[in-house]
Length: 285
Image (cartoon, rainbow, N blue to C red; front, side, top):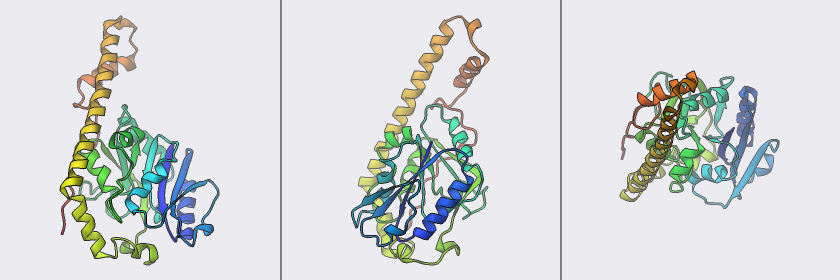
């Protein structure tokens, strides 16, 4: 099951529209967990049917709110969502879940087209609103880092996933980002609280992201994710050796194909058909 984790503030109508688009296009069970500020005066206007709300203290840094929501989640897949997106493609959830089959060890991420760029422009486009396996989140330690007042929440795990070759792009699924900078929304009080309209917040976020301390934290997380991938591959190799030690005539065609795939896979033990390459985000000042 996919767990859609979404912070929201001051946007009950936009949240309701996002939720309606999700429900109209999803084919499977999807849960929605929203993180809301305790001082948000619009809280009582939000839809309550089928949504779990988590209240956070006023002033909580935005980048950690997705992880706050994830702590209440029951799904195996987390979606990093926003309240200014719209689900445009019917069956988006089925397509995303199918894409995750490329990670039989349950460690990786997927992202879709967002309407900001052409669908075939990866790796030029930067992934937004990605999906992550529970195994990936556990290895990293959280869904999103708690360090930033705005932006960088998705940049952090995306960089980790790219470093270990575990990020896939699904260009034919559109989850549209209806942001004011794209002419798809009006500037509201929520936008005015973030880096899209406050240059100091943007610059300070960049400084923090590339600080020695936080770069070291990501490097440690990359090492943990790689170790989990290696452990999963070693376990699969032991299973395959056990199969080969038995009567090969008893192997199913699927098992023979699995042995063949392991033999020609990369060092993570997974075949990547169209995996996004590692691209270091450009540092700006």
